[in-house]
Length: 461
Image (cartoon, rainbow, N blue to C red; front, side, top):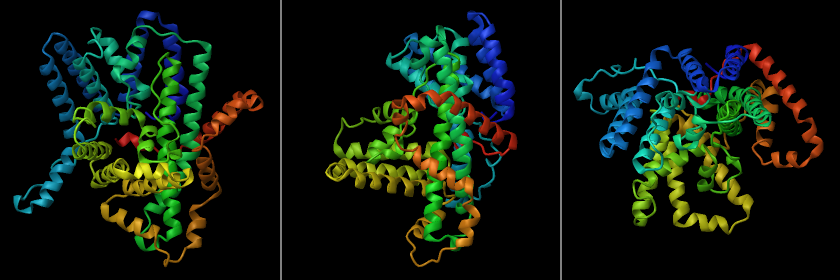
């Protein structure tokens, strides 16, 4: 079920809020649990058992670890979660590549093609693994209440596209939480802002990006290619940060405080800073559970560089079973290593605008790799970014750049900048904020009524 679906907005959300606030304290988690399982089953009936199984396994793994069988519980959790992740997400990729690489084996390339991909599997497996690892490291105590634990795993706001919430971040809130009128208002405000990001900016930028990236290579001029790359950069940012805003807002409606997932990443002045601002919960997950486990920067320089490459290739591969994601991770990891070796010092000595454009340039090229279907497609698109000879098809640009799309790009660029602090300082603008939120909700309702289907990008991860 999409947060932008009419059934969610006008049926599911009012119903769960009503049932939640009318139910006694002892039953509130049970209400959240039942509605969350229904939320997932609405679109993924056959995979609901997978989430429950994942929760059951990790719940008992936590208890096993707490009974001083630490390695047995940890290994069981990691093996189980990585196994289901590999089977559902990567089996077809590895098997088809094996069949192409070794044709003499005469393997059936379509053997795993029919394996479905459960929505959000990368998120809930990483979430439950973080729990057992934290129990193993002594950072949290193993949960003894399965209802509370299953509520944590399946809670609908962050279930299918994050942010990746660690058990330690909501452990106390699962047992006791309070909702004030102010926190409820802040939650509603955050949800409306996220909804507006998705429907008004991301979807309109998607119209441009999808059309340009789907053009034949010989029809893409340099200007067209740059417009497509910028449109996709705005689409993926406002799509994913919009979902995160909605998830955080929905959490606040029920008394939960989820971690922030984005902090104006396109204002970064280095790739290192970009990853401190982009998909923050995933970056921290890989840092705490993979990078540090490999030795982090406590080892030799060469080993540190190797650790970085491993982590970022894994980060890329986490996003999808395609060589383009691996290449995207390698691209970012490579520049992080260059920054560690010498580039960061150079950037610090340069004017901020130069280091800012350096970061944007690297990120935009990376998004081209990320968005392309194949490495070859990415290569052709990147070549077109610097092809001064190819003439611009003005009629084609006019066709894709309609008024809504141009406005969306302009607002996308504007709201990628730290302008919110200026709004907060203005008492006049602050007074009008409730009216602006109502207006945004009305406009979004028209978009929802129009029935334009455009799922969140990160649902497929």
